[in-house]
Length: 284
Image 1 (tube, rainbow, N blue to C red):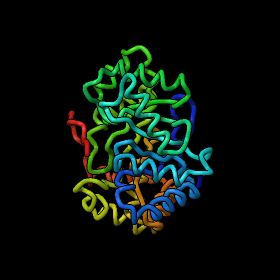
Image 2: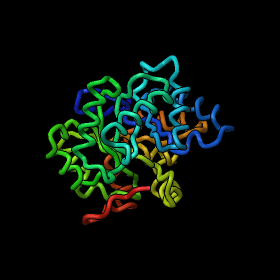
Image 3: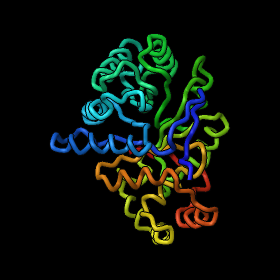
């Protein structure tokens, strides 16, 4: 079965499941396993890799740089800038440092990690300058809610935003009330971090849920694969799970070709009801 893909507004298609790197680079003893995992993921078709200058103080970017050495052309590379670096010369310097750690001359998609005190119009201006200099191809945002996106859209150049990366999994569905519909209406794909609730207390609630496990058993797959298939059930969401164990990488990649039935989606939706009103944007 054909693997799921998502198309950015500029026409670029990427796999609907990529590779996250949060918590990579924190222990030198894990470096080889992390590099190998990213390489395995690339071999299996998960060619989008997401990282950030924040992760392990830049060490995660170094892990990525090592993993993509010699095969940069295969990779859709995403990194993120701290909010306090997201304007003026600080943005230029931060990007250049990320490029050095990543061992590349251009980042495919550069994101504002979350909103800080620097005005959005200054961030847009910095992103445009980075594009003009060839240091980044496109830019986007992360952890911005609907009102933030609406504000961004009113700024000259703001509509060039390629994505909004936010927390999203079956037990955290708040974006479905207004942010996800807004992004769909404006053809802005959502990038879902922690799609398996990896960094939260809800991981076991999601993966050990009887409904998830029942569907997984019938399908002959893992509950994590069912959870990823649920997150990527539409054509507007990219999931970026982090995996180091070879079996987990293999499972994540196989979920690219796992399509849930309407009945299975309804079962999961009933087990994890979406909020009926506006909720604050989940962040971890």
